[in-house]
Length: 92
Image (cartoon, rainbow, N blue to C red; front, side):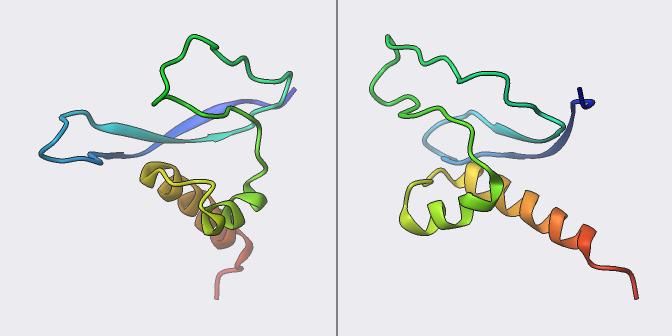
């Protein structure tokens, strides 16, 4: 079992002026898929449409296709991809 840890990345206010609720973004390391996510069949129509485990390498194409629209999710994907890319570049 790997060690699971999270790190706070940022807070975002996606609808300033219309709603007063910040969304916090965390980056997690070491998560393991141990089963399919449970879906709440009683959820409101405007809540999560789908819950599933998605490898980060699939996400840029999902953003391009319009499968991922939420700004905080797109920022989170970009942040994780940039961190991974920076880790692969050796220092000068």
